[in-house]
Amino acid sequence: MIEGERIVNAIALLGRRDEPTDGVEDYCQWLGHGLAKRGWTLESVRVPWAQKGWRGALGWLSREAKSWRGRRVLVQYTALGWSRRGFPLGLLAVLWILRRRGARCVMVFHDLTYPGNHWMARFRRSLQSRVMRAAYRWSEHSILTLTLDKATWLPSARGKAVFIPVGANIPSLNDIVQEGFVRARASFPTVAVFGVSTWPSAQRQEIMAIVYALRSATAHLRKVGLVVMGRGATEAEAALRQGLEGSSVSLTVCGLLSSREIGVRLADCDVLLFARGALSTRRSSGLAALACGLPVVAYQHEETGFPLTEGGILFAPRDDLFLLADQLTKVLLDSDLRDHLGARNQAIFREWFAWDRIAEQFVRALDNMDPQAPARKGLEIPAPHIR
Image 1 (tube, rainbow, N blue to C red):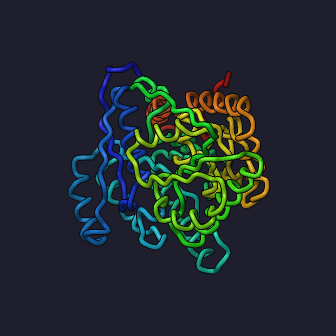
Image 2: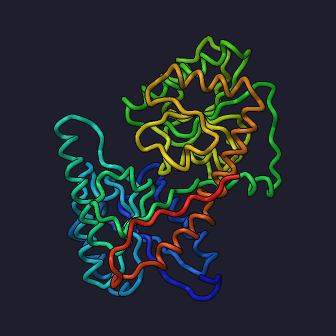
Image 3: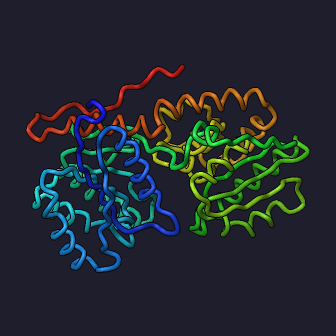
């Protein structure tokens, strides 16, 4: 599509807002900016089921959607966006109304199914898989933020699916530099942590990994800085200070910041430590380091895959604290390695995770929407050549 050739009005439909920050809402805003450069307009609309109850919200949606006939509606899926406890049956009612009103539904799947082996977790996972498969069938097209081989819930006929990763919800290093940013070089290397889980058991695990990795690094370095920012940082501060007490780690906790402030803070650091589960193409907090040209040390698990495996990232198997700490120490001790990994991440970012690139992929995918066409082989954006 030639820029300026036509304007396509599209809706990004969201469920309940996540607090205190909403990554899906940020995703829609950044995507909208990218699409606007290509002549598309994307308006975010939130279904107020958490405020009005499902009966009131569905009535509201039915009235709103009267004017959406023929328009593309990008329905943003996370299980907790459409349910308080991860049983997202209300999503199917939303899709039924959209189809009845003649909207062209596009599912954007941000979630995997619920993990765990407890009987309730297995029941929740089974229900989520059924809802996601039904949503896939009822939509004209589906966008997945993980490669299709990672989506085990998908049916075997995947003709309506395309992989498009999320982007970093912060300005890129180039944008920050253009605004006059100059890196403040410290006399000691600094590690960034962007986001800490607020769920108690997950938070304890992450803090243990962070503390162990930083203490291990100080066995080889006289001093190391640690900057913790974003969601959950303030809640984790007391435990981090206790765990690092007596070490030569200099801890700074920033808490919630604007997207530009996050970019500046990250660009001032030397490496991102990602201990919040496994790094994947749906985790924008981990991808923020790529936008800033930072090397990354992270856990790897089943959802970690291409193109992250081509970047400047040193992985450790999930929950392997010892290797995670060794990888972090390795990066902190070698400035040439940091420069090499950072350059790789900038290349990966430009090719895959820059919002212009993501918007380009969306335009290609949405322009391929044709409800009359026979099922096609599942679309995968072709792998670019990384130089």
